[in-house]
Image (cartoon, rainbow, N blue to C red; front, side):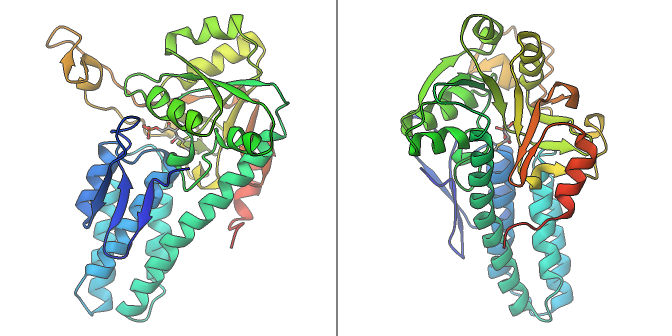
Length: 348
Ligand SMILES: CSC[C@@H](O)[C@@H](O)C(=O)COP(=O)(O)O
């Protein structure tokens, strides 16, 4: 299982997910600007991975900062935090991780201590995420039977997290235990996280995976024995409404029509009680060229009007269960999610 992010004190090493599946290339980032660019350009992507990359960016910045005045250091740290937070708006893990690091640094009594606390916190976020994903995988696996076939979209695998992934975690765990689970992966237009990343990751793990284009989902649900749809998420609102990669809402509606359970694999770090409902989740809109061009070649008339939202919101009524590291929530999301969040931090 490849690690998408590694911290090395004076730089963060990021696996360039835009170059996968054919090239395994790493970007060495020594500045917050370089990490910002990696997040914006989706070289590092997936909600937990974005948060980790940003947290490590602050650690690298802190190690390189020259001031010895704590007040100046913390003021600059907050500016770096705001800058990194401007890279992408939807995945709440970005803000969660940055704020966790800044809050920790604010407890320091001098700059040397602050540097150490920042590094410790960033490393703790990464370590916890690995444990969180494994637990999500265990819970998700309890909903599946030997021989099941799931349908997924985008990439919520190991490279989107510290390890194991969220929606793909049960597939890795099943493989480890000799349980046969197979998957259909939507290619995930326009940037093909499904075909480039999910199919590649599952193949690496020896999981039986079949690629479909997004517009084949309804026919696949109608004609293949799909036991569940399982997806990751970028932000879950307090009432359970869930933002995930564009196309997820369509799958949720289809799952309901075809009587197939629709599961969201969600670390507690992705649940945002400050956002009351899905309507309040900011949805990123990306460059028109992601749709008008394919591998740099125009595939639409020049000047075409484009609407390119990167995410959509699935209302909680379509969600059969939200699978967290602390257990599975099936209904009454508002209360249940608040209860789970209150008992954070779970893993130390
Ligand atoms: C565990 S990753 C969960 C989500 O972040 C994932 O499903 C997703 O939508 C990622 O979108 P992306 O635009 O590739 O960052």
